[in-house]
Image 1 (cartoon, rainbow over the protein chains, first blue to last red):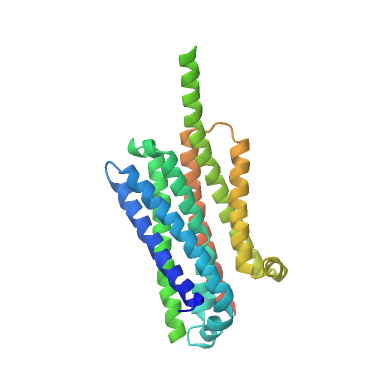
Image 2: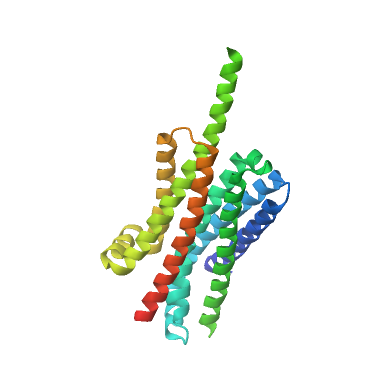
Amino acid sequence: MTILYAMLILHIITGLIGVMSAFSMLIGFLRRVPKIGALKGWSLVSAISFILSWISGAYYYVLYYGGNVKPIILKSAYPWAHQIVMEAKEHVFLFIPLVSIVVSIGIFLAGEDILNDKPIKKSLAWLTAFVFILGVVISLAGVGISGAVRG
Amino acid sequence: MPALEFLALCEDKIMNRFKTISSISIGAIVAVFVVSVLVIGGEFYAPLKDWLKATFTHHWLGKSAISVMSFILFSLIARIFLKNESEDMAEKLLMALFKIAILGTLVLSVLFFYLFSIH
């Protein structure tokens, strides 16, 4: 297995872990009495996973995608897979790790307020929902882009 | 009186928690805005994209680096200059980040639809 291939797999796996962690956080926020320890743990896993996905994705994207994958997609029957899907994906992804870090720090600092159902709990939950939903959309976009390469 | 000093310290620590949350929210809001401007600007003003590529070896690496730097820088600036912030302010800034992140996502998605449609 080459480093390139390993980085691509790492990008996908850590991205999915990030998304699943965000989902776990969302479920945690919806509990009547959230388990703060679990929320803190999942938030850390989520933030770190997205950062790792960012780094590994950067490696693959910069060193391989532009010169080897993008031309194939542009010549295929689905050039929009790069021009719309990949372009949007690679840029909106940049929001996710930052928002995840804010949510994680917020949970660590405002744990008691979350337990006491203060308004800040709802804000953190909404941000988690954003991370989760955007993460799912971006994951599906990645599947679509892979399909365009094969097509 | 020691009791009052202790209460003041507690209150200070509580307010600092929300000050930190407010600060990083501001940092993230600025980072989202900066990334969006760089992406839009790069698509309509080629020298910007060229500068990012020349400085960071790849335009996307440049946007990544600048987003991180913006986040850290503006979080620190906000942390230094914000007065003790309330929970209410922290909550409002978190919601502002939520709305701006959604807006940034929609704007950038529409941008690439638009660029594809005109080419």
